[in-house]
Image (tube, rainbow, N blue to C red; front, side, top):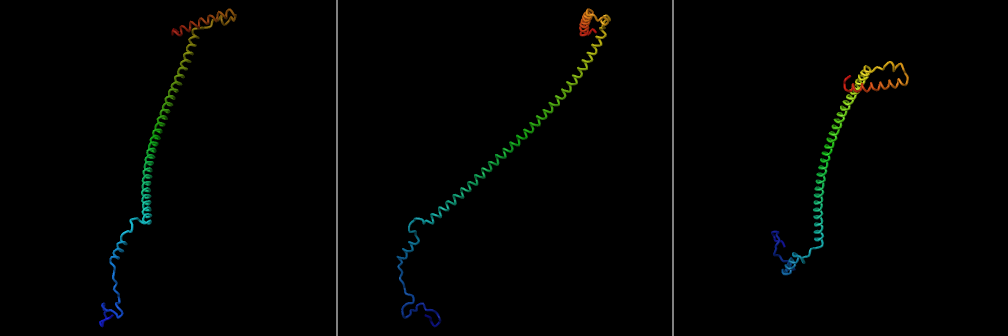
Length: 187
């Protein structure tokens, strides 16, 4: 109980025996209980541990697979983008070549058309010149014939058949003679 100073006496024992009975501890039993609680009873993991491990494995595999698929999609998209760029460049180059080829064809067609037009104009001028020359030559030949041959009065005044045959023969001979001399340039 309390001492006159008001302190509790730890050695105080009441009349009925100690306030705290002494208990003897069996240390062997306690040490064996403590050892059994700190060590696993058997080395098999519990179902919850296995389920958590499987779940973590599935999550890790899914994350790895997702990352791999993302990488593959990125690689495929990059390859497709590269191929599309190459196709676009080739298409553009082909289009430019086709435009240049079309422009060259058009220039060649225009040049050919211009040449043909010049040649046609030259041919027309030459044909016109030839026609005028032929007309002039025919007129000159006709004048030379008119100077060379005069129908005799007897052929004009006597329309009898015998005279007509004789006049026609004379005319034919004179025409042949004229043609020979004219072609030889003697007239």
